[in-house]
Image: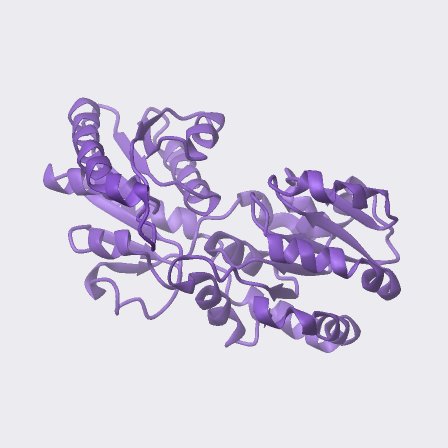
Length: 363
């Protein structure tokens, strides 16, 4: 039997790229001789991250539509036609057995053309509130793998399978890595540790919040692992000189950072939320309000309404010291948040998604 050809498209942010890579890695474990090709958007981070993970990628000239009138919007129809043509050409040459979309600009044209050619398609939707691309693609897709309940409003009910989001497999064993994590980050074992995550690029409002509360953290006798992001590192690295504060542009050993932490402050991107459910530590979500359909707030709310995390909106950050201090002093609250968020984890998501892909391949 000839090896399977697997076409995967997703990108724009780590939240679309890392699930795509996790899915590819799992397929590769099951079918070591399979051929893989990724399709991304030119100039987006997938063009760098996918080859780093060992996979080939081709780029389309595509971007999103801005919400206001811009020159980019005027060029959108040309970009779309160019991308549909190029995606069609990629499909003719690569002859995929299945096409998988994890969201992002490039997955639209890629899966539209795959559907036109009669290739089975699967969408993996990370968020509790889907973007317009996946809503449109779901009409023709064979399967839609989701991470949240109640998505029948957006997708055909008979195609939905609740699998959860793919997460890094090294997170499944973090509870045995607490000492290793504290040593790796040279932490004081007698102090509580706060982990601050703003996503790979960083989050301005979260960074400003931490900067304005450095004395407060000192008074609380906590230590801070602060991932400020690529865009902000030059601005905030000076705080590395302060005892018990360490500023990182990016954290390569997220498993050890999670293991070493007692409380986590985080954005509420879909991948982060899924990871934090597996990590099972008390979380304060500060969602970005500047994303499509305010989906981060919706992601966070789906956890908060199950009493499994705390939500602090950007316009409520003045109350942060009270919220944080209350949580830090309430051991019972910390334990109940931990238990409840762990109960929402779907650790076999990657495997469950690939089971569905395997069914499409074997048809």
